[in-house]
Length: 114
Length: 115
Image (cartoon, rainbow over all chains, first blue to last red; front, side):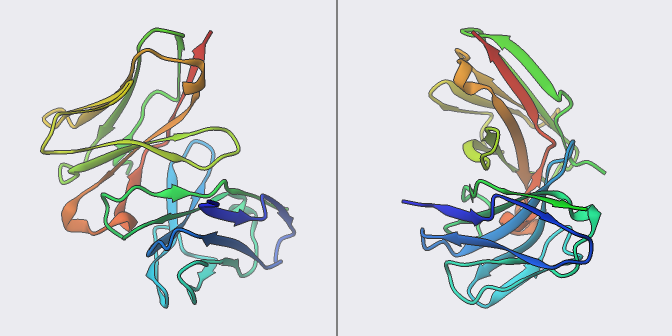
């Protein structure tokens, strides 16, 4: 059972480039989300989705787009990469959006923007 | 304004001893708390949770204590094992503010258990 799969694990971009971070889960989870983790900071929510076709902004959405065309996939798009987007990105999912549901995290994508 | 504070960036304990990780919060509306553990190069994994209707929750070697009046919770690991070495995140949410999207995470405490 794969759980939450993120690709790539590492990525280096130049300022202004765009890219998509992939996230897929095979647990039929309704809720999916993207977090970023920066040194000395907690996890901060970028975007989330409570089901296919439904997305919403989190705490730090600027510079990122998401879509949820299927239950399984929730890609995160960086439109025009900036050095401030250098971070570790985690995708997470849960059975439902309920706050008491535990989140299952992917292994992360380490992104560097030069 | 940091609503969930883990004031100790790191903690080092000897194998077999107790590890106590602390978490303070400022929002009195928080009523559900979770701890996640994170190993290097991996994503966080759920460890244990507690609702504000309880003041203690146990799961094997892990116990979480909640002191609502002090707005403080702590995670106790007894006995500590080298495999417990990881970063521990405290997270909190409040019922009126929605679902998992309203979860607030602390900055984490890096626990090192020395053999």
